[in-house]
Length: 149
Picture 1 (cartoon, rainbow, N blue to C red):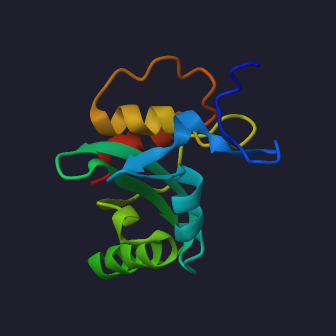
Picture 2 (cartoon, rainbow, N blue to C red):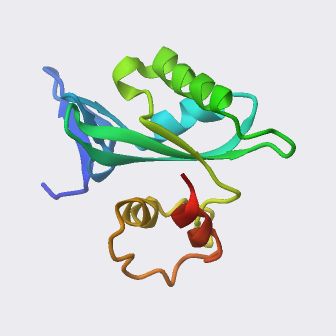
């Protein structure tokens, strides 16, 4: 056996099922969800082009979902839209996974291959050291993440 970093399960017949990255799971009130699932629920909304979901400490649930959202051009960043996006995630994934915060940004930090660098987004939210950011292709996005509220 090797540690591949994925959640896996073996059924009674000996078949393995991979459920996704173990280090990406958000444990909200004892229930797990992947950031990609939350992001997918947000992107299903007609106004959202990109999204990043992270976990943040929460006194009630242990972890709360916090999201950063990039909107279609010309869409206004309103509290009503925030509420609508929270509701959409709740409808698709369940109420515990509704984001505590929906923060609007112009862009998300990405690698050259277009992968969102969630660890940096999470570090910025928490006010922690960013670590190595040399793989980020659009470093200007970091200021937008830092300033979003």
